[in-house]
Image 1 (tube, rainbow, N blue to C red):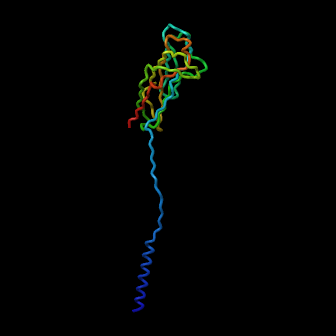
Image 2 (image 1 turned 135 degrees about the horizontal axis):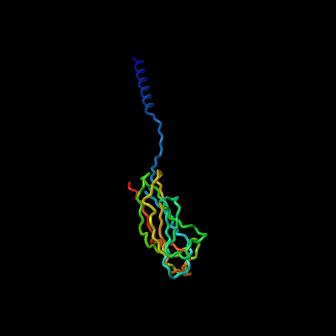
Image 3 (image 1 turned 90 degrees about the vertical axis):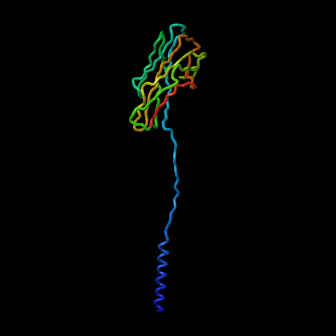
Length: 203
C-alpha cells in the first residue's frame, strides 16, 4: 500500500514536470517599419526655343523679317531648319553661334505606355522680348520690338515602355522693320508671359 502511494506520487510529479517543459517556448522579437513616398504623376521639362543670332543691317524700310523654325518630325532627334522670309535684304545667320534649335520637351512618369497622349500649348502667341546675355552678347541699349509665336511641332507625344517621351516646340520670330545700332544684343522672352505646354495622361 505504501509503495503504491509512492509510485502514484512519483507519476504525478513526472507529469507535472513534463507539463512545465511543454509550456517553455523560446521567443524572438523584431521591429517592422512602414515606408511610403509621393511623386508627381507627370513631369515635363523643356529647353528654350532658340531662333539663333541673325545679322540684320541698320534699316528703316522694307518691312519685317520672319524667322521660321521647323522640324521634319516631332522627335528629340529631328534637326531644326531655320528659314528667313519677308525683308531678307542683307539678312543672314551669324557665324560662330549655336545654330537655331526647336525646343525639346521631355516627359516622364506617364502610365499610358506604347501610345500617344495629348499635348497642348497656351499663351504662345505675340510673346514680347526683354534683354538678356544670350550667347554672351551685350544687352541692347534699346529693345527692338521682337515678337514670337510658338507652336507644337506635332500632335501628341509617344510614350515608351518606361513611361518616357519627347516632343518639340517650334515657332516664328518677327523682327521689325526699323533696326538701328541701339537694338543689337541678346534677347529673351519675358518669363512672366512664357508659353505653357501641357501633357494629358488620362488614367
